[in-house]
Length: 282
Image 1 (spheres, rainbow, N blue to C red):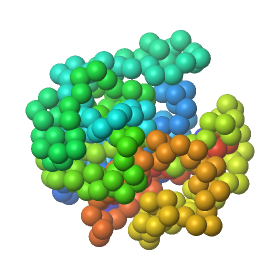
Image 2 (image 1 turned 90 degrees about the horizontal axis):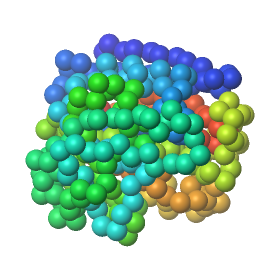
Image 3 (image 1 turned 90 degrees about the vertical axis):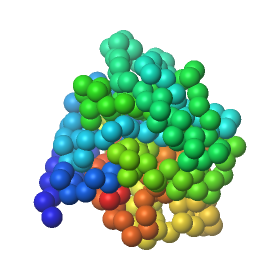
């Protein structure tokens, strides 16, 4: 198996490690990805994480379309974006002006949106949203020409972890249709405990949760992945005071079959408490 190893250092010395399996020419079936996105500042940064993203698309087949489950679109009911030309949404405040100038003019795919509603009766279409920064801040590095159609699937606030995992499994047939399923969030996300210094030393609790999550993914420990955590409850509360940045992990994991392999394609920490761990299921 041809493998590529990209190793980088986050600004200020926090280590990030990248491991990608080169899939080009091997299989028409698309992988599933979970990509961290961290601070919006990554969208204009040059660090090992953004350099990893810039290299990542060369290691996977070119998708027909991309379906992103972003932490930044929560709705009542499950929605899929149905627009020919989704707008770029700058859903944050208080950041430098260059962030607000970024546009990601990828086309949509209305036929694929309709196809997705047929995979699950719980999904309806939406034309009021667009591409939020959980989507464009990573795709601008993966596909800088914005020439691959992009859709978003919302996070339904009324669903349990189990419900999200079940919905992810319903989406799995898209992988054989050339659709790249991407969850975008963070393994740890607690803005009350964040440092706005990117290279601040990582907190012990964030490192501990990151390692527990990694092991749970490797072992397919669904008790942990679904939040049935017992003695780890206080750690979960620190890592995720709210669940929106965690849930996209369940979509990348759930749309993958049990025998499939996981590669942790990036490992590292930013801003003291943001795990930038990213993963690919093949």
